[in-house]
Picture 1 (cartoon, helix red, strand yellow):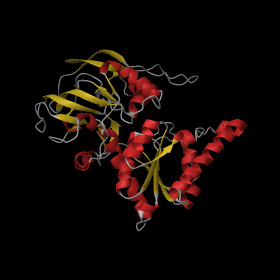
Picture 2: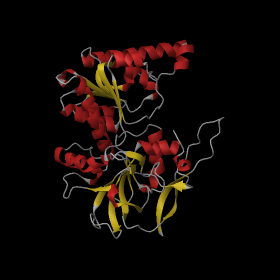
Picture 3: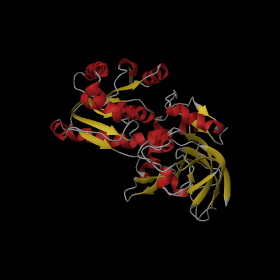
Picture 4: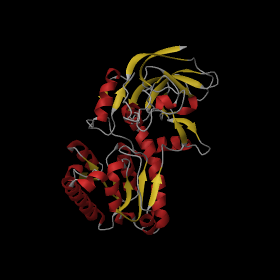
Length: 387
């Protein structure tokens, strides 16, 4: 058996219909796991990236993944740079000392897409929020040798890999309907987030006009420096839609309508009256009504997440008549991993040097700051065994 120092999440109490799920907390303790199988590697995580699935796991929303896995406790974390310490007997493609990117594939379908996510809902998988952990050797991708990018910049890879896949599908869908249109005349817009930021950089490379929201000055500056039009989210502060309050609370209704109109006017100006050609929406929930109002004819709504709500409502006739396509993707194709890595190395399409780095002792502080919206960076990082 192998023991390590780890942050673990225990299963929550059984659901009670009279209340919502009870949020979990990370506990620091010794964690034990079995010796290496022939196809596995023992690794030490260097730097981990705080991903949205960690927030879902801790809030137990939409599910208690520990209970779903039928385990007492689990180690989370599926985005990190790891160093190979030891190899199983059948592992020939890696060497001790190799620095690799951990991939989130717990179970893949026949096309190479994730059905279950490693260190999230895939039973028996052990995450990177530990001083040492083990994983299948085919579930890591080595960094380019002598890369011109720092290890910290490479730690942002998860959002970029996800962005690559989502953008590839969204762009192809848009061009399927408008194959001869000049993208310079069309707007790609996104709610703020690291994956959206990465997708907009790809959209800009394809010639689209690109814009993105942010709610603090540091992020607005970062967006502008990348050649993306920054849109201050604070201009329309009451854009969160609650149908019941909209019907019964006149003050709320007027505040919402005012914010929605400012947002619509902003998009009208940015798009030259066409509306959004491709809207990158990883939030859903209460912002969905405003999102759908501003998407133009033949427009695309593309998503890889559901941070503020999973259940959405559409009027199918309106979507059909306006020929609007809805793109839903999750992670990326396993076989594309090395292609995306090589594109990042060659083109400098990679995250900036991270500015918010939490020590391993402070992982719970990072979790709280992320939940409370106090993280300023698009790419918060935690140090496990890094320098």
